[in-house]
Image (cartoon, rainbow, N blue to C red; front, side):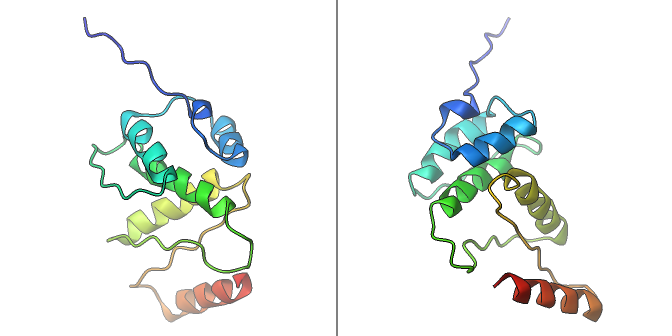
Length: 132
């Protein structure tokens, strides 16, 4: 029998209370191994490259500390982070994750990607202009 590793709890990490509230509301308690390794490193402002299988929580591993750091910045109405990804599907997945994790923190996101119609671009541009 393999000994089960003790999972690091999110509330044991130095995350902003609003981020912890979102995790609690979403029912997340314990961090996955990639999250337990990545979150503290990113919170310290260090660069990180992580590799893990699909479904292990890589998106949260980088979004949670990014949202945490955004909350430490002055609210001047400007873009605080730019996340560049290779596919439209991943852009939409990250956008949805930011909306969930950032709900209590009032952090929002906007996925912008190519291949859409002119109408979609106009809507994205209007939304971006209203934000800043």
